[in-house]
Image (cartoon, rainbow, N blue to C red; front, side, top):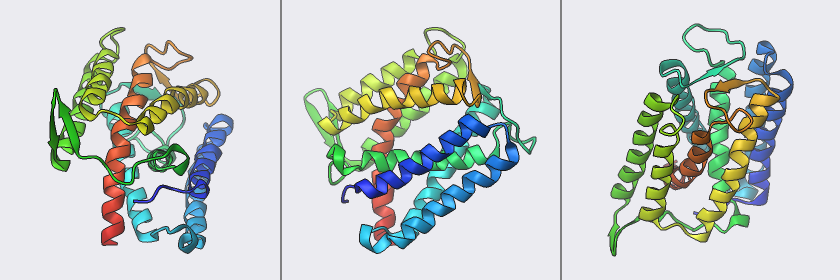
Length: 258
């Protein structure tokens, strides 16, 4: 699959930036955020539709992919916050079934979509297709199924660990560090991967701190770094390595069938 243009990355970055500014200014204004977030995302879709031919955007695939991102991001956050109590949102919400406002659950879809877009940015020199190689010592396994299963297992095990250990000053972040080390060992990252790791080491914690310190959006236990815990810092690096691979596979498949 071709890399994404500066224009496409700029559009999605602008959406995330616009909502981030709104969070910093008006996160506690429930009515405004409930209207603003979906309106910005809808405006994005209309803009993509208007340039779809020029930018080679498959609108049907884009809509389905964004829906998948929203389901994955929203469910993960709901399960982590509401079901497991790992951290707490401090903004108002409409419904008792979720302490996370619906606008934030929707925004999670846009966040994951932007991460996938950023990982495919032409400026970073992404590969044309996902690698299926899993390295074990001097041996290699060339299997898409095996690689995806290993990636999902790393995500599952680290999520299970944080559900149990989020209050521990060491074991809250150690499984994520181990997961990152394992991913680096098994998948032998390219220069592109290291660019992403460096970017998310900076971007992830900075945005989290902005939402916490300025937007008063949520609260983490053990928030040693401007309210951000160490496990979140490592998690951003781990998840971008895995999500960029899974997202590319999902989006490529959608473009072929839609």
